[in-house]
Length: 383
Image (cartoon, rainbow, N blue to C red):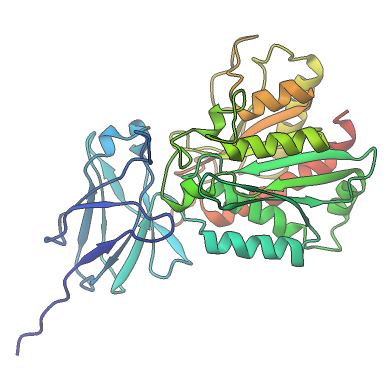
């Protein structure tokens, strides 16, 4: 008796899905391509489901346009993320030959999901907002709208009382950087701890303003870099508009209403296998006070966790030569405040590696909790 093997099927018609199938007839050589962002040539994010896997047999998947992606040098040293249940994610050995990124799996289950990084779904986002309001004491004080009408919640922990510091954290301006909303989940999770003395000290001095996902349309559509209009939100802080970049426009309006004493913009970096910050040294308004606060933040975070370091990162901008379209530069300049971009890796943190998960959602969450400790220890020095 001959038992027919199930045929391999691939799909990406779901939240944050992105793949184009070239040829899936041979499980040992599945040929694929990544789809560009809408109205943009950027691409690098992928997320797809493979069903009908033959247990115990090697399956090889090849992203044939990896060499033309936005950050093609980032594939060196990178391993793809995989999951059998969309809950537990692990890394699979991957190889980049200068043109294609290939990865192989001998499956133990009949279906598997692959992604550039552990995805943060819209469903989980809605759950996070409910947790924030229902369990973490946050108030939904305003709701913006994306290009396609998705909600953009602004949450506040605090009462807005006069004299309290106003600390802003936003995440996932670049929609493929899902580690950024995992980071925000860590922040919200720690805010649920009523007996956290360090946290309570912070909240006595400051209100927290959180935007967990700045780019819900791009995240839903499986974009790497842009919103539904093909706009890079982190290049829109000098010319935002309700028509093309309503996400930034909304947050800028709210900042003008409430004020800003600290700004932290959570991102992911494709190329650099480290956690690091980028600062405002190129801003025309840069002062020794801001430089001191930047150093204090970095020193405290280094003391708090081995998952942060200061040796690797972006080249420093020359004095007066900052790109003022970036959120951290624009906000730091406008409000004369400590303003940082916090970058997490898509790969791993080479100073504290994890061979099974690489950098992960769980590690991103812990970093969010650790950052709250840093803010607690420097909040009185911000002004």
